[in-house]
Length: 199
Image (cartoon, rainbow, N blue to C red; front, side, top):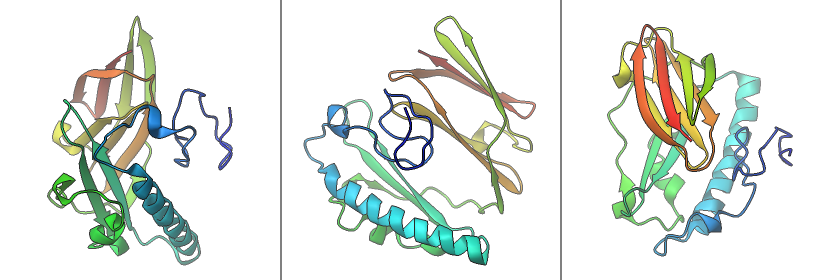
């Protein structure tokens, strides 16, 4: 199956395109939080995506400025979801504008973690995937990363997100995984992150 927005290959089971983030099917089947109306967040994210696309076109003609934002919504153990907004560059200090109109209660919004110097270079790391029985083993090369504290691994609905920080660069990648997959172990040494996932 191909994404109608960017033509990337998309598995029929995926809810979002891993390339452009377009919603491929209704979120209603797996997001049923009675206290949240995610349609407001969808509209706000669409507005911000359009703004970012305009900023990206502008950056292509003027050169990169190193700015952006990310929004994470995490729920575990039957607790209320937590919303975390991270911003940098031109978006710094616009967290309220990003969330305005989303309907997210203030108690659900987490403060941004301690600041890290934004690297000038962000690249996708090289990695290998092996399947051993009911486990996927991802070996990710992260040259210059000192230890596991400089690595952030997040399990999402149908993917695993990896962010890592070296002295002068950042690494970012997303691995598609089957729905319900769980991270069971992660180790780091000799510039290599190994993530073990049970499927």
